Amino acid sequence: MSVVHIMDHPLIQHKISYIRSEEVGTKEFREVVGEIAGLMCFEATRDLKLQDVKIKTPISETVGKELTGKKLAVVPILRAGLGMVDGMLSLIPAAKVGHIGLYRDPETFEPVEYYCKLPADCDEREVFVVDPMLATGGSSTAAIQMLKEKGVKRIRFLCIIAAPEGVERMQKEHPDVDLYIGALDERLNEHKYIVPGLGDAGDRIFGTK
Ligand code: PRP
Ligand code: URA
Image (cartoon, rainbow, N blue to C red; front, side, top):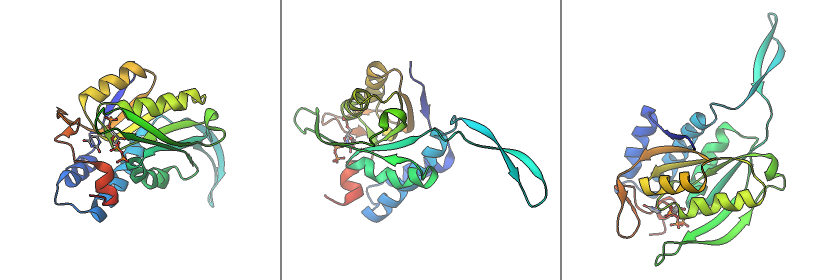
């Protein structure tokens, strides 16, 4: 069964509360989503493997630690996932970036695929899938299935706000994928929006409504 990490860092909680407010405009919303993504990346990379490295400081020789150099990739689910990419790359700048385009049909709430471009060697990479919202789980489970079909073996999923329904579906369909969640909310409403949530993340990041 996958591990569900709910972020308890005060800075993450503070920033999520800030962007929930309907008073926050596009510029601030986009900036703070990026900051939250960076903080969540810090938590989601805690178990990256290290190896010893010899270093000569100006004072003496020593042995330090460095990342093993295992290859990483960040894969946002378009559109809203784009808002988390720069924050992730600020901590893991050597990661490659793939894109998966999915939108949720407003009638059926099922994900509709419209784009997929991944690093050529994505099957050799540890992949961080990012999307601010995990609602029914339709989009994230479909995106992860697409990655698995391309041979990706190690996947983590990061979202800023999740509904219990989405978490349950992710754990059922992808029990090998650990979840990093900024805040676990109460439920979905009749339009499958997260309550209390923050509204439509894509519209709020890009100012389209
Ligand atoms: C939103 C969000 C997720 C999805 C979550 O995207 O960014 O991708 O909905 O809902 P689900 O868990 O029920 O699938 P949306 O379809 O609104 O597209 P957008 O990012 O282009 O706005
Ligand atoms: N997608 C969003 O952007 N917000 C929700 O609350 C649910 C799905």
